[in-house]
Amino acid sequence: MLSGLVSRRDTTSTSAATDLNITQDEWVSVKLNRKIGPVNQSRDSFRKIMAGKTEEEMSFIIGQMVAKGMQLDMLNAALTAAAAALANQAAVAYTVPTSGKLDTAGLVSGLSKFGDAAGEVAVWVMHSKPYYDLVQSQITNNIYGVSNFAVAEGAPVTLNRPVIVTDSAGLVTVTGSGSTAVTTYATLGLTSAGVLVENTEQEELIVQDVTGGENLGVRMQGEFAYNLGLKGFKWDIANGAANPTNAALATGSNWDPCRTSFKDFAGLVISST
Image (tube, rainbow, N blue to C red):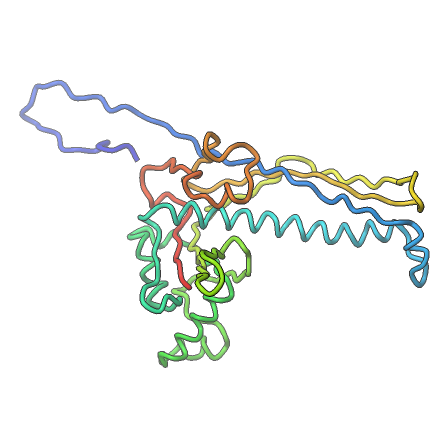
């Protein structure tokens, strides 16, 4: 929204009005390049398996694992980036005080960060640890009425928003080591299209016979790439570099706001222990 676009008009003035300048910024996603394998296995090992498995079956089995692995990589990268970028913006970051565990009050306080735009928050994404902390707190507090039924069914009251539970490493931060180590969990309240992962290149998977060794072999190797974007942020390539590492994705200062209002961000983040 252009600041001062609508203002008071002085009906008694003959002074010249001051022009407003339109500015524009870019929503810049980042390209992440990934490899698959290589995986190398001897042909003889398949002949030795009962029923005589073939390299075609190896390709099928590994292909299933590759499909799942690609999805998990995209999920972890997306949540790592979203948690880091939002936690770096005080306007949309909330830390649960006292015991540090997520509870209903923590959800409300986190959601309040979005002010009158809280209705834009469409879904909660959280690790199973804070999820069950939330369930336990609601049972302990002996909530009455309709919510009792929800707790009995194993689903906590989440302010009328669905919950996606995933034990993604992108939602977990460990600081310190040994007995002083502290684990912090990020719970994300995301808006629609707040985080976008887009395939931008055709994945390629090659299966090749390998000779020259003691045994004949079969090698599988592949490549793919995708773009990761966060609503209201642009990737700072000067600081985070191209094709960034996971550590760079997890650095909040590498994600620069490109919207003037925090209500146009990807959402909010609640930190708990």
